[in-house]
Length: 262
Image (cartoon, rainbow, N blue to C red; front, side):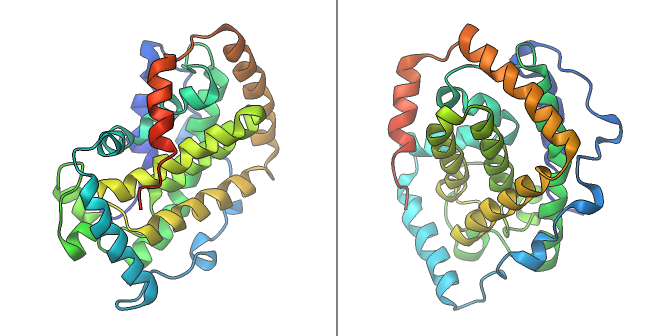
């Protein structure tokens, strides 16, 4: 179905090769951790905004206001963040080290395995609400090509933000002393969808809640907790040994992350 969010399909190949190093094989069947224990996010999320409601008016106001960011450095960051498969790479400055499948194979395996859980949690509400993306409702420039596949994929909730926020929460737990910059960057990753014009404010907010629900459920799974323990040791070692991100680039990124785009 065109409206379904497939983080597994979008991310698997990129995560497997990120850092030009081979990744450990993904779990058989790519079934995720949760299976029937996956929460029904449709039952928990607020409904998609009704036309003319205060939430819909806020969506329209934010979309129109963020069009002024076109061709600014924040727009360029939104274009960078359109690649959801690069979320770990995008968190390098916040973590304080560059994680790759070579220096953190268990960490990447964990993130790859949780991807189907995030996908499945997003698909049900997306397919039910089928809300058009904001550029289709209001008209305006976006930071990525206006492809038929993008137009066919519903707005609410943002699967892109559900994914980025879920990974951000996991990485904040793996490096708790860096939780604040990690979650700031994960929030900016989601807000890039507003800047880009491909998701509404309500969809980004719902995506964040969606990702939080998945991570909360994941902590009830023994296999996930065991994988977190292994990943925690890897991340600690990578933060001691590197490689480390460029300080000047990180300073530029931090100035953009600190901005409120709307």
